[in-house]
Length: 390
Length: 92
Ligand SMILES: [Zn+2]
Image (cartoon, rainbow over all chains, first blue to last red; front, side, top):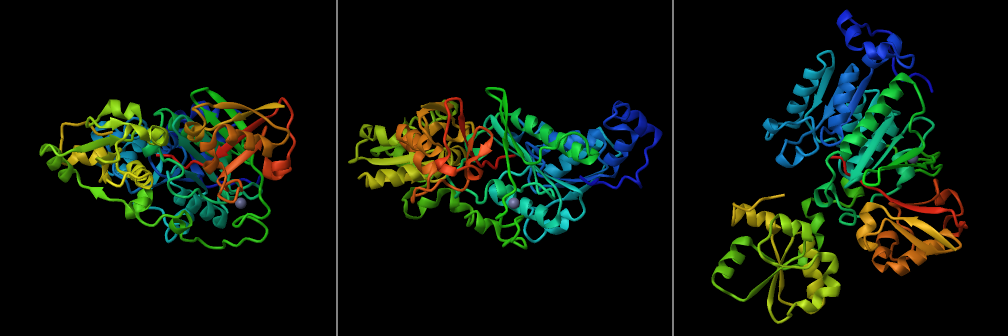
């Protein structure tokens, strides 16, 4: 592979030579390699779970220019895994929090901040200032956007994604290698694949995968070793097993193939079937809803309402409002536990699963089933603030 | 013959919470058919309504994508492993 980085302009001060001495004495890095790191410009898309270890290690290693793209604010549920952000950062912009930590680790790094959501309008321009892109985002629309922007710009996309205790990593969009669309031509329809917010994620997992991304970024910069090009690394942290699958460049790939049909960035929300926030709970269009305030008033008035909780038992353990528990997946086989003559209010965490449950119940003859708007989170916000949220 | 199918985390709830399922098959296609026969809830996650493998689900025989082998008709041996790898997007 031709060298990615022009290191001819980079020089290291005596202080930097001392700082990077454990690199400089390695034959795979040397002074030349450290100058390449200093000359390198890496864009981290996202400063969350994957972006945290990624940016921390790239900064520590001496990558000269780090770009950070994020628009999000630190919240309490981030702290279990997003190690860039501390408890005292809750409520701050992730960018502000990240930059403080990265500069504290290595003041020689130049940081470029992009306080924005990466979009089809800005992606090519943002990417143009960097040599390597590291994708640490968390949704399909942005994954495809980053991929296509990298292919169109001819920049490698160092990729990782995570779910619960499993992760995937690879390098896409190099000149000879495959791209993300070669691996997965199309995204899943919304709702069929759970997100981390719904499915959960083991806190150390983004640590593992983000460090793998950082390793691959550094190898690309140095031109050392065997890059993870054309290989999909599967990490199962629960079994602690690493496997590798082949990823081939698809000659018919719509973006990197011989006759591409995607020649500019498209509308990725549309491509991924997302139309606004309601997509998660799409059946709710025809599903009767009840507001938490109304449910509270009617329960207080001793009206005959059966509250059904369709979350998982471990969620019930965290917090419940004494509903009858039947997890959504068990509903078809346990529906006989319910009385179709009674009014049933179904809830889950935030309203998406219970909407599916109400849809199912109504089709099964439970004409008096309704969905609690906003789930137990809305209940905790609006009715009983003593309840924990998760 | 009996071969192993590895089930990824997101699909385990539809496969009796198992990570490895033994199926009887001569080809990859038969392995997937036997799998969804044993665990019918998996069907809609693996196949579209017209019975085609969904485009965000990849199936590998050992380390090779079956799209680059003989697809469904790819023969399997006793020692082979079929791996299902759906796309996941999580990162935050
Ligand atoms: Zn491609």
